[in-house]
Amino acid sequence: MQGIRAARAAFPDIPHVAVFDTAFHQTLPPAAYTYAIDREVARAIVLRQLTMGPRSRAQLLEKLERRGCPEDVAREVVDRMEEVGLVDDTAFAAELVRSQQAGRGLARRALGHELRRKGVDDETAAAALAGVDADEERARAVELVERRVRTMRGLDRLVQTRRLAGMLARKGYDAETARAVVTDVLDGLPEHARD
Image (tube, rainbow, N blue to C red; front, side):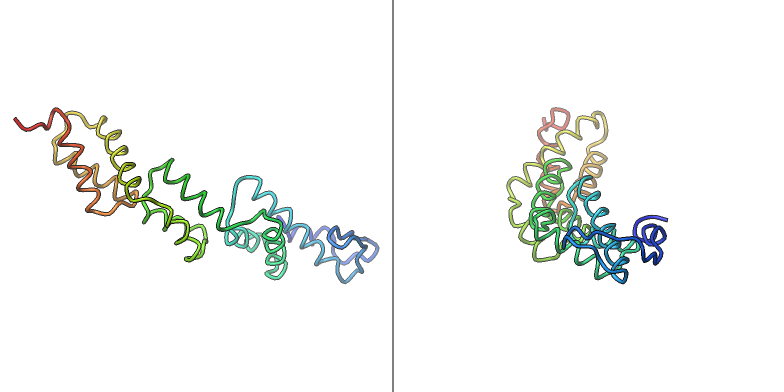
């Protein structure tokens, strides 16, 4: 048993246990024990998740739901974390776009998919993706292809083209960009230079 269920099992309707509510600085009556325990456990779960790395609001709510936290308690805890600035979907989306584009070379389409998967709403995702520059995206595609083509020496041009275009497609680049970048890079290689 983990999370909320474990805490409830540890304090099953024991009227002599006083639970101190740190948010209101008072000792709660027995009827509020379960709610206070739920809230404190939910708070601990959220803080642990945020310690591991930034999370979106939806990811935190999903984690609390999986751990058995009542929905009203989960929303209250995540709302409070948002008020104090520990949860910020706009900053999370901007950082995810920046890091995934720099680290993995993802294009706008793949970044949008990644943001939706992490539970970022469409409006926030669109604002984060607005900062993606098309020229930078193309330059990143060229960099990816140049790095990958080094491992393909000796292969037929058609095989190289297919593999490189597939790699760019998996990273979210559209077919037109992939074709243009792969053609430009392969044309620049000495082994494919036209006599």
